[in-house]
Amino acid sequence: MNAVRYLIIGSGPTGLGAAYRLKELGESDYLILEKSPNYGGLAASFVDDQGFTWDIGGHVQFSHYRYFDELMLKALGADGWLFHERESWVWIANRFVPYPFQNNIRYLPKDLMWKCLSGVIDAVRNPGARANNFKEWIHATFGPGLAEVFMEPYNYKVWAYPPEKMAYHWIGERVAVTDLKRVTENVLYEKDDLSWGPNNTFQFPKLGGTGGIWDAVAKLVGHERIRLNSEVVRVDAGARIVTLASGEQFQYEQLLSTMPIDLLCGLIPELGEKTKQTAAGLLHSSSNIVGIGLKGAPAPDLKKKCWMYFPEANCPFYRVTVFSNYSPNNVPDISRYWSLMTETSESPDKPLDRARLIEDTIQGLLNTKLIESRDQIVSTWMYNADYGYPTPSLYRDDILKQVHPELQKLGVYSRGRFGGWKYEVSNQDHSLMQGVEWANHIRLGVPEVTYPYPNVANANYAK
Image 1 (cartoon, helix red, strand yellow):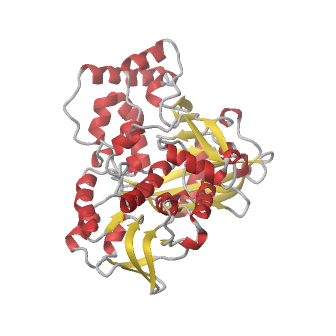
Image 2 (spheres, one colour):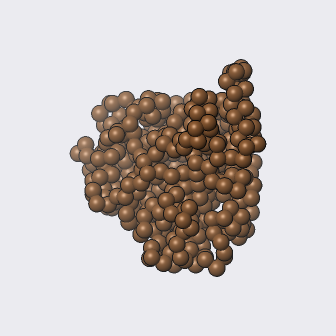
């Protein structure tokens, strides 16, 4: 049997962050077990048969942490990055509206613009009772017009659950709230309002897509300390033994898991059935990524756009990234090709026919005028991430408050995008720092911040 002091399940940003920090602290007895053949988890990248590079969704990098920024610089070097000003838009009513949508409603047809503005006025004049769910929060914050025109249909397409099934306290910096004075001023003076949010500028790797970052961090961790194609199928917490699908076993002293916490609970015999059933109540959606490689060049109105939101029913996707704009190396030859990457959600509340998705996506791109003809297409690629978004459901926090203490009684820590299940701290920077802070806690006794206190983590910016 193999023996290791620090055992980490998963080589996504959280697992790599934990291992890197242990190495930094002088530890050498650590190992990452990764079930897939590549590093990075949901932040991995792939190259299709035609030479187009694709991510698992529209990842961008912005940071709340100096530590994260310094590691990114070390991983790729100063010359390994491209820097962009965000240009994000909403396609609605047969036109592009700058994001945040609610600050730029002057772009809408007058009837829709007034419907949105009058709803905002009503919401400000008649504040309702405390919201009980995300849908009620949307109506109380934005008014019925914005809710109907954009917020409700778009959020259903993203989350794949109706907003009344979701809580709203996770929102923080994720959603721009409405400022009536600002909205009205923008309408009257025809002002654009484009700079809201922490990711109004972002960086992206020159080479290798987002996965190139985590390949580089894996190299810093040490490839010999990462076992790929190593799926964990059992965690005997009492004996502190992890078993792989191959039958190989590892004895450990400390365990960090970044696999989905509901799946983790099912692998631990010592955990009570009540706790397992409680964990199974967590909601998540799947993400379906379709990449479309195109010949020629993007239309003039797409040449500077980063990503676009699609609330309407004339396309299956909720977001499209002009992925060739992130880096010219995301396509085989930028003088001849460009690319679009789409994201479509799926859940029991929003089923999807995956067999039709590529065709439906292409038709959606035609419907929304992102492409002119099927003849432009030279490559298609599809990827399903069964665990795509950890849904902030109404009962999420109650579930986590019950499950985590039971795991930690057994000496098991669960962190990361799905190990922690907190969407509000599941960007790349948050995820890596959850691993770093776990290492600091285990090794130095330093309290964690990012996972237990999301609002504190999100109040700080490295830049």
